[in-house]
Image (cartoon, rainbow, N blue to C red):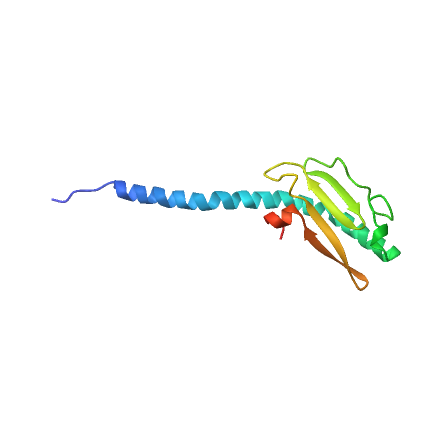
Amino acid sequence: MTKNHCGFSLMELLIALVIVGILSAIAVPTYNTYTKRAHYSEIVLATQPYKMAVMECFISTSDLSKCHGGTEGIPADVDQGNDTIKSIKINQGIITVTPNTKNGITETDTYILTPNINGSRLQWAASGGAVTTGLTR
């Protein structure tokens, strides 16, 4: 006589449970990092108009020391931004963005863009807490 088995044995269920546990242990931290980076992209994109204005200021004055927020066509510094950005400051062409604490991003995750003169062009170097923690590429 043969016995019909229906269902899984205890060992098969435990193996499936272990596999699901390992996958979730890898997936959850990866997803959290992904969502932080996605929220931080708004901060990176907010610097674009300021970068263009600093470049225009440099082209017209040939001197980055004259490029401050609210002068030479550069938008004024922002002290109270939206719910993502706390402040944007421009000093001698250096753009510093401080984010609000939200979605795992803290105020220490600053984004600093420093212009470097290369002939008659500007090249931008990113630094700050967001670069060291890997929120930007």
